[in-house]
Length: 256
Image (tube, rainbow, N blue to C red; front, side, top):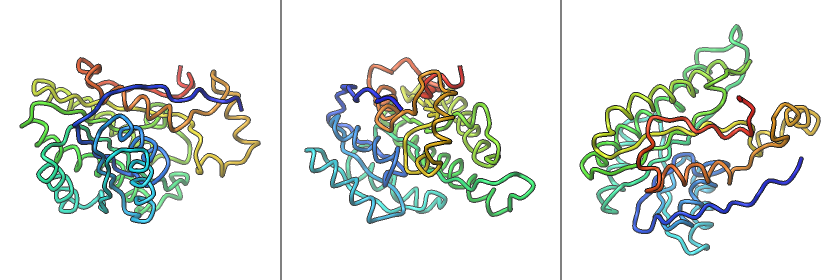
């Protein structure tokens, strides 16, 4: 695969507070690091305390400010406690990135209730809980950016991922509806839909499969976590103030 360009997005988020769910690894970690490098104080949220500590260290070592918060995104009490605590103790909450997500892939006839429920509750319910809690603070402040990390699977579907695709499509519907509710309060809500991105998950597919996947992508390569993070930075920035209810697809042209 050809090399991807380096991340050159420059955004000034000095003085702002950002919260990123699923920040312990992969896309979430890249987004948290990018927000921290842009000057935001970052609340890194996930269940894995050890990996969260690594994300925080990366941000702090680069001169940024960040703290880790353990949270089960499916539990309302836990979500409300984290969001309200950050907004109250840090004085504000400007940016929310709903990234936490899981997969439980199998064909629908073999999919268990638990495999369906786990994915919907983590990916969609978690997004709903964090967006609801954060929007209360943003509405009072009359400013905010909510960015939901969906997927091209939520747009075009994917065999073996009925649960995942349904959750990601639901996130797009939530994004579009909530944007209409909050636009008058200067709170924007957008979604980013990544395609095939280089990660530990995609590496597990093997070189042969990845080679075939790359052939189907007009850009002829997989994307990087940093490229997705750049899309998030743009939507989080003041430059995106007139953009809301949109889905920014980052897939190298795969969905056309």
